[in-house]
Image 1 (tube, helix red, strand yellow):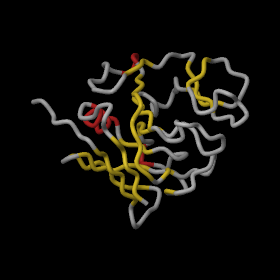
Image 2: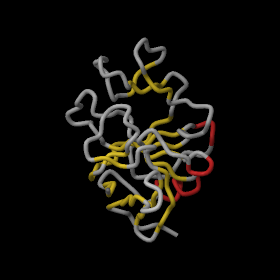
Image 3: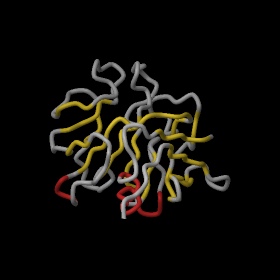
Length: 177
């Protein structure tokens, strides 16, 4: 059965635990983890908050060794062992994909813990990029028990696969405070 395209994904913070919430995409309602500091309007690098606002979804990444290629209308790129993401405010490549090894502070995209088996790149701080406003805000896989993230939105593996099939380049994600 063909799924209808979702134009807006909304993320609502839980009133009981600011580090958890629910993601709503059409008729799909999914529990999610948020940043360890909850949500914030004035996002800063390292604050552990998920940014409040409405954003595009630029692309998706996936680990080709950890499951089939996801079906999606988004631009899709396989993660390679030499992929990183710069989170160093002094790096001219701040908040961008970087090749490894990298001498500045960065995250590895090829992770052992499965969190980045499928990743949606949320267009936070991407046009223009402002140093110190936060990098690598992704929608990715959740840790067991939906433990908080460093500022991303995280859902379980089956849910992200159902979600990614329903979205495309015109889909927006809205994180509500």
